[in-house]
Image (cartoon, rainbow over all chains, first blue to last red; front, side):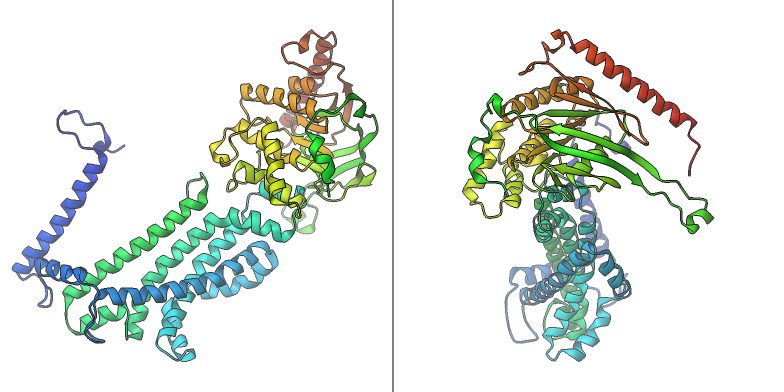
Length: 274
Length: 302
């Protein structure tokens, strides 16, 4: 136990752990902003670096009015986020629709698992962006390659977690199904899939997290629309404030996506800690 | 497939003349051998091992509507024997006959109560039981499935807990669901594998009384694996005592003559009680002592 966790002995000055954490959070925030602002005034950084106060103003500008549209090169950040989200959701759904059934299949069959494993082991460590030129070559418009990359990205964690969940179903549940004379199909639908659901959802959670990481890089390369394109466009305009804003907004959206899947995890855990 | 007509009356008490002495379950020359590692590869690695004979030549006839306990020292293959009857494990030699038919695989004619409950955690109490009913009778209307499930929930005394999930139940309550699920498919025979082994002593005694009460209503053929002498005496008509493994065999079958319904408070007033109990204790302590000694003298293995 750390010294700070010991009960406070001085009465009249005691904070709950939540309040202490809040204090640390505010302290770090103030420290970073203060060093930034002082550094700006003392010319520690490059010429391009804006001051903290200017960045906060700019942040408020983008967040207070996210949905303006003055032509293709001057749109609110909300539109870019929505475009990126649409690509991530479509790509993620396609990837999951491939990964979950395939994961169930290789989880159920030792033979298929061993047969398919070399493909998975070779393709899994490849950066999803390596697939982008292939997508550009195979698919014609600019939207499809980004979705293609996200679909590929979303496959691996879901596939591996689904396989793990399916092949590690508690034998007691399978024995119950066997003693009742349940068919193979009924056993899969009613017993194996619900039993593997916590693993599958963990896989989906990792997948959507990585998909959201990858979409920014993919859109920087593909261009046109999306939050990745926004960042690259603002870099070309040398507007660092917009880039910092975009980083914070992307982080917040990623956080929301992660929380959503965390809720689903709690929902399929049934009393077990996810 | 279970005829639906008999369902409405199955929970009500059966009349005494329904108890027959016809043989319902027969075990013929059952052996179970786990093959050892004898390949040249294992020999080279000095990992070879000889065959392990868990059960050897078990013969047993069980009459309909009797409650039979199988008791023996730990590791004697009691659970293996039950798994063979359930069809979850295949015997190396011999056959199991239920009502004259040879058994090759699991089926709903045998209801199984598992030691670790084996309830599906994502299903409520009602859904767990209805899952069993629906699996066995896929064409039965949903309302009928629900009413049967409810009937058995009431039978095991869980009325009001229908919508709870297993993680909200105590161990004793979970095993009641396990018992209700096994009975709800109306099996010909009920197999219980140390059903109270994971429970504390008070809950265990309470559940034993409940099983006695339920058995008085249903009078199904039951095979109970246990290592509790008191449990066997309270519940059984016959007690099968097994020798220690390997090469486990049936040592002796005791008839338990106590009248029913039985109560644990008055059970020991029966003249035969202490004699039976002493005989079982002598057998079990002798076998257990031999198991322990064999373990001490067993050569160390990797």
